[in-house]
Length: 217
Ligand code: CA
Image (cartoon, rainbow, N blue to C red):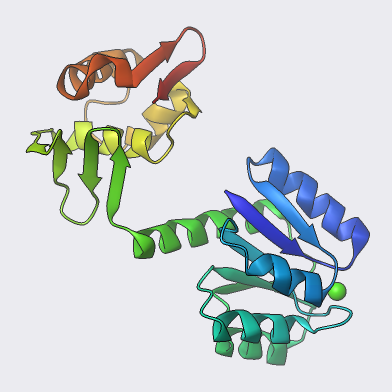
């Protein structure tokens, strides 16, 4: 997940950059509008955090030009306190969200994750891994092009795994994700559900990492 951070305040930029890196994002930085625009055009950028008060090209102009060139990458704009006109202009120019300075990093991270989810839903309704695909809109699962029957819980689990390919997922994290489902409140039942899922999708797709949790893919 590549985040482009366009922020001219070096101290703030460093702090945000560090926080985002710790949260698992890959951060690219630009300290002025022109560099921001150039990097923002790169296809590997998944999301853009754009300060509006920038030296050189103003943030709003960066946003306008990105959108004019057909770039649909989600953009969260950073505005100074009290500049409501900036927020309105930012949203009018195609920003997806905004945050007023000063803000707490966890809030920025939460909003970026929400934007990522939204744009991911727009971009594709299909999760794919090797011979396995899940249609998020219909819940249909295909294994080697043949429909696969999963229980609601298995489907939920599979979607979670497939949206985090090669991530280490702890047992607690899984329990938390599946918590609202009845009968899934104890982590020792997770192993049972995992083995059922493995039997259906192929045992080698979910690895158990002793003491750490699981890894899909
Ligand atoms: Ca600034």
